[in-house]
Amino acid sequence: MFVTILFADSKMEMFNLNCKLINFIHHLKERCSLDFREIVDLLDSSGKVMNLEEKQHSLSRASSVLVEREFYVLLRFCRDPGSGGQKYKSLLNDFSQSHPELTELLRKLSNPDKEPDRKVKGSRPRSKVITANNKSHKTTKFRCL
Image 1 (cartoon, rainbow, N blue to C red):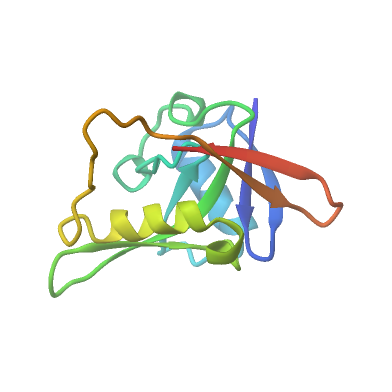
Image 2: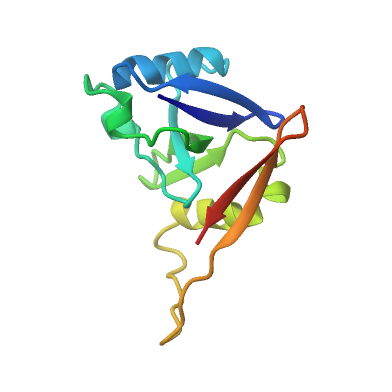
């Protein structure tokens, strides 16, 4: 049971899900060279944030939160102490160029009150394919709504 995390310069790392979530998050920060005090999260291929902050001290298995063989983008979670707002920042370099659909989603998640979603009556969301390339030129496809 594993997942693949995308971060830095299109770097991909595989992580074992057969461990406690608290250990998974600790190991994630260690292998991605992050400060252990930072709050991280993951964005799945459908555009859903996994909300690891609220589960960061959980003793349940990582497999109870994350889906086996899924690709996730590593995010940094920040709180604005003045306004109490939240912000997500992708830790995948050139994220805005390689994944513009997810970039817009992160902007909306970071400012949920500033711009409500516009819904057109009778319209259905379209899925978009997003690709991530690693150094060995393998292509990974993401489906996002």
